[in-house]
Image (cartoon, rainbow over all chains, first blue to last red; front, side, top):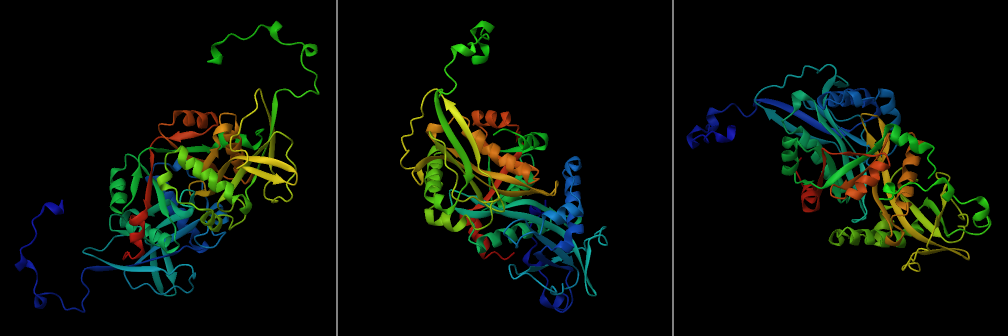
Length: 235
Length: 235
């Protein structure tokens, strides 16, 4: 662990004159932006959800198509129902969006890495803005939930996903923070999501973000044939 | 357990001529109806949520007011966002609603009990339809959720509550079944809710209704000051 290494002595700090000129780039900058998804993003979203199913070893439960996503998403104003934030990445400054929803101002942040990130799927996830090109690195899908005790809506985060080559660099935190910030802006009372109990790294990450893990609650799910049987049930 | 008792011999079945006349009431009929809540129900809903907080020993988390409920509920069409079904009960046939949403046809069912149900809060929960009077016995609050794997919405049931004197008579099942039936009608893929892991009676009840309890997932919640800190967070 890097934390076990002793800190460098003060003299190891480079003098200003010893460093690179201020105008020269230091390391490898990565420009990022979080924006609302649009119907044009559906092919990318579909691929990202499939990658998530592969990662979770749950491809047998995956039946989404681009068509079924298109027909069930983007049917209401942002934040009123199912909402998706997209993470865009580029080694160059990202151009302004040609049009943007007044409901959300995109969040931009510049990272600086020692090494460039090799993205083997860069072409598959490229989006073009005129001559500029950005890469989609991940997404978060969330929607309003409701607390009767607070008499306030909140947000439930259904999916948070960052592509493999971009993980462990702060992008997941950036996406989840964007949802939390939007919740506060709207006066909402909670942001909730679920985690697998054996995923200790994820739990640690969420706790560092200020979340509490509720140990006693279990999810009940009525689906498939058991749900279909209610079609003709004599209530 | 009743199941351990031997079945009665065939001769124990009463002959038709030995039973009461068909026109005479048998036991105590209870007429019930599930309908969509309206803003006029808010005072009752507020009382029901408070009773739920008392039952769950969570009154310290209860901060809902009639005003905060009114301003956060009924802001969208039924089933598109937060939706409430109300359970009405009466010892007389329940009159038709003066007006009803085309989105949902109320569900009616007549029960028959050996003994009348004593409702100590009958006056507090009475609703008048002209000269007729019904009593509100419970509610279920639910809203759409979304499965990216299915690319389908579902319903999440936030609260299911039946007042104490009406419990263990099938009304909770009736309310939850109404949500399941509506989900099927809308082509939705899942109905989900949560249960406390020590509440074995509730778990048994839900499993009998066809639900699976997911053992591995835990809820993460970001709320209070931890959430508020994201207002000024430098994402």
